Image (tube, rainbow, N blue to C red):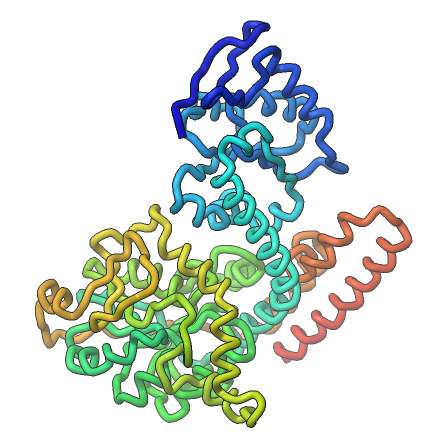
Length: 496
């Protein structure tokens, strides 16, 4: 695209053009902005109003006048308009392919998944025509972000209650609680992608020279190959996540690092060393504060591998290597075998729907993997010369930018061999005598609050706020109260 030319319009205001195509009126750009804002079809004050490439940004001032409670966001296609950024509450860039690919992640980070669903999105048409290819890709990303936000809202509404119940179960049933100490060894994290398979002989050989963190889905693989990790990490709060941890049935000595909301088999809670990890948000965190408990901090992430990497960065000054971090679907099995869920699902295979059918289905469901890939690929990640994707010369189909792909020759050249063991975990002695009463009081104090309803019934409250019919509002409110009553009974049952 040729250079953007700035010049004065007929009324003296600044305008601009590209190859003779004007991005604002060449007569009266301010009046043009007023007409644009007057014709915006918005029923309520949205949380955010997002405009794709508003150029000189005349519309920003007019939008602020009409929608005083909304925050205004610009998605920029060009840095030529940076001098007008002060008109906006937030600016997101889509000036190159990487920024466009990461746009949905930036929208989640700067606006928030819930706020996206109460935001309004518009395009400045002249810019959409001039930057047509970029504009098309950007709106595809916006649509993807909105669909993912909607899915997340309803998923969170279903799972948030289960996650909180998991938190209470983990607090009540865990017998041996430990905290992590820092280590002077390099850390290797094993995820379960297919690239892990050829790493196993080298990992076994170097076992004494590394601190080994095993992502839950790779547990079966390591144990099958007689590689014992320093701890297994699990963050998933769903029922199926427990299947991976069942591989530890005959390994009472292996510690398990659990996000406070994670699902875990009861026998592990009562027997194995448990490292409870806390998030810094939600009612699980508020409950920990009430109980005066401080556990190791974990970064909330869509994938356990992301949480593991963030945690590892706090545990060592040495390098961090991640094996099996493929982050894309492929033909055949998606994981290094054995994999607990593959084994479980294989029980239902038949002539019509066998392993090939499951593999093909998994290959199609790759959207979440793309989101995880984008998280690891963000240029702002502090991975440069610190965190590496390690494989035995595996040919990955993606590039994680600042997380460099390296092989074991690189590992040998940068890590001196040592027999020094990793630092042991530190046991925490917690007085649980009054836990049940404190949890009960905490729930009673919070269970009728708006914040409680927004966390545990997010989809219902979102629909409630956007309903105009008073009768339907009353019906939905009554339904929410009934669901809350059942939820409170489940909490009570756990603390008996």
